Image (cartoon, rainbow, N blue to C red; front, side, top):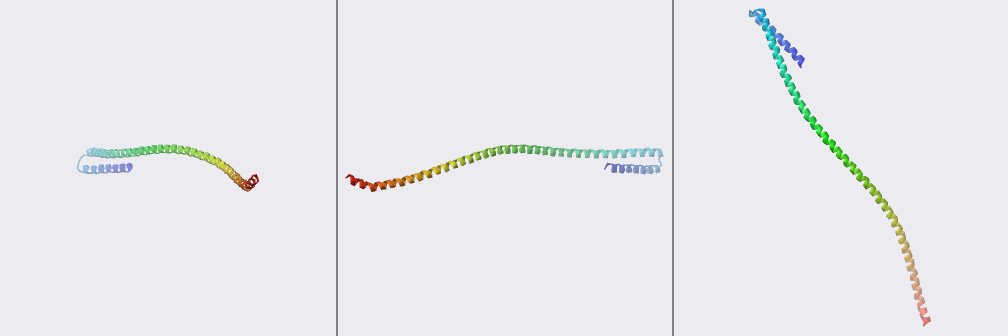
Length: 164
């Protein structure tokens, strides 16, 4: 933007100076006065161009400052979001660690319960076998009692008849 505008401003200054010389020279003034007038015109035109450039520069600086403030606000917001996300990540990681510890404890408890159940099953099998043996012995004893009882019934009338 600056080089093209400066070139255009210089051409404008040259054109106005050349035009001013012809007009004033033809009006019958002395060439020294025309040159002084042309120099003043050149200075005035250059001064206007400089003021215009200063105004444009001031406006550009103002726009840059505004854009910088917007970017700083966005950066601050992004930074705050990053900090919140990091805090949430740390909290989540801590909770995961807690849950993993609880899971390990639950796994150990389950393993201990499985071992206890296995022992109890073994005890139950032993108790069941002893109960089966006791039932068989009871059945055998019952049968023996029945035989003894039947024998007594058969032999008791004989013993009663012999004693009477």
